[in-house]
Image (tube, rainbow, N blue to C red; front, top):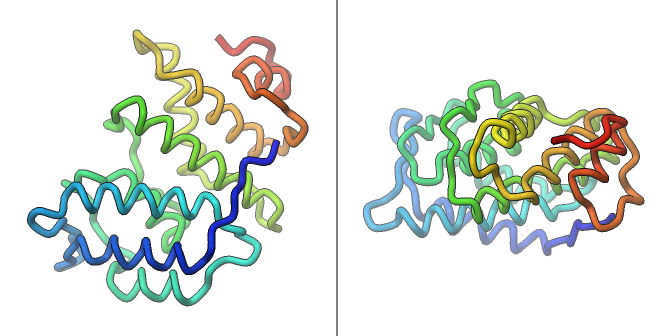
Length: 199
């Protein structure tokens, strides 16, 4: 199952530039510029999607990392941003890989955005799976487990594509071979994980 569509690295650089033009940073606190809240949200989602389509074995390098870190410090605080979780994910990917500060308890986006976010993280971990350090970052795994727990407790549950993406993330972390899985469904991933029907 190959869902990774590689972007031109220069397009990723453009997304970074657009995003940085929508925000200000003061004393490590990141804020949207007045009137740029929706633009920052859209730019952050575009950048996350672009990162999910990158060839991580030959990453963009200095252009993306240099531009991003020249404006946003490693200790950046994204509290209060409309795009707080998307920015936090981008930051964890580009700067602080552990993402220990990420707490998904309050992550309650619109279902369409939720599907987008879950699919992007799924694509990222599968694109990185061929690298030497192929374990899924713990903050991504926490997202997957949180989302699956919501599937059990929320009525109505999150859309099926979210469950599918989260099971895929867990399968990658367990080094399950899902490369030949076609027409992915929660049941197919659950079978790959050896746990039968998930819900």
